[in-house]
Picture 1 (tube, rainbow, N blue to C red):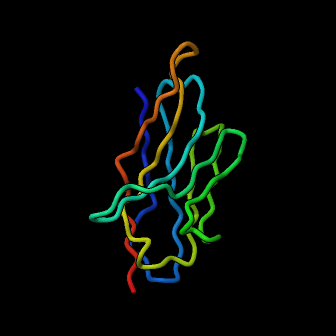
Picture 2 (picture 1 turned 30 degrees about the vertical axis):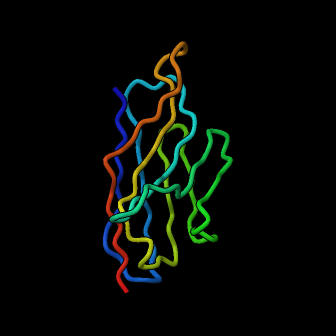
Length: 121
């Protein structure tokens, strides 16, 4: 029974900053990739950023150096620092974790409930 709990969303003005956190808890044998995805009204869910257990990262094309993903492996927690926010960043941001609950089990994706980020102009 794995849970992902996001926090840090809210309302911010354009040009401002926000830091999202996501903590995974429960039976986790091996945590692999963690990341953030977002979904705006009427749009498909899209990749924001992902990070491997070794610290390798990949970002969506829209980030252009504004966002930084990081993780604390000891706490099974992933962070997303968002700077220079734009109105088009407004979306529900979802935490994702790919992990094994047992050594013999396949790695499976788990999702948080999402946290709303609203950027005003």
